[in-house]
Image (cartoon, rainbow over all chains, first blue to last red; front, side, top):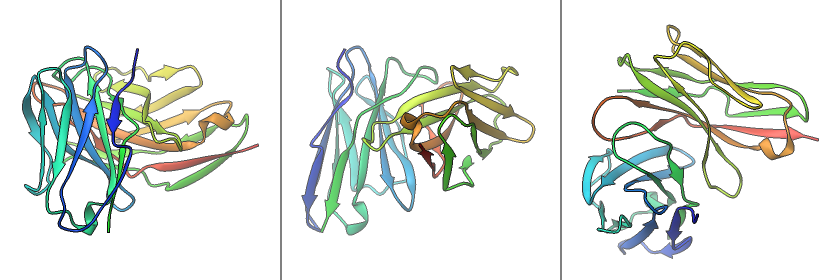
Length: 114
Length: 116
């Protein structure tokens, strides 16, 4: 069974650009969450999608957005990139909505903003 | 707001020995889940162990066990017979139960080194 797949694995952008990251969940998983990981702030929740609906959003500016498609694949977008957006972006998926079940993480997309 | 604190940024243990990683949390909820996640250098986070707050019995998974003290809001992870493959970042995490979104609050992590 394939795991959570995130693409691209590494990318370099410059300030002011925008970026789109993709997450393909494990087959059958309908909940997709995104987390930002930085050395200073640690892991912070960005948002969660279930059945194409955003169920919750963390404390991030509106430059951070996401969506989920009917096949449960999800994308997140960061517009007008800032240096502080450099981070590892992790996608995590699970079978169902609600507060049960194990989260399965991808290996992440490493974004560097110059 | 819920917070999770891991007071040990780094720890080391000799191979085959036992090590305990500390975690405290703050919440006003009475029912929640607590987790320990492991992030090896390859970066993929995996679940080590999970504890449901309403269960008084401490969770165990092979060499991994927890000491859950609900009143003290403490949730430590004990790794017995440490192996080289246990070297990783370990994150303590929390989520409340109930309806709604599944959102983990993580601690800053503890980097565990295993000395051969």
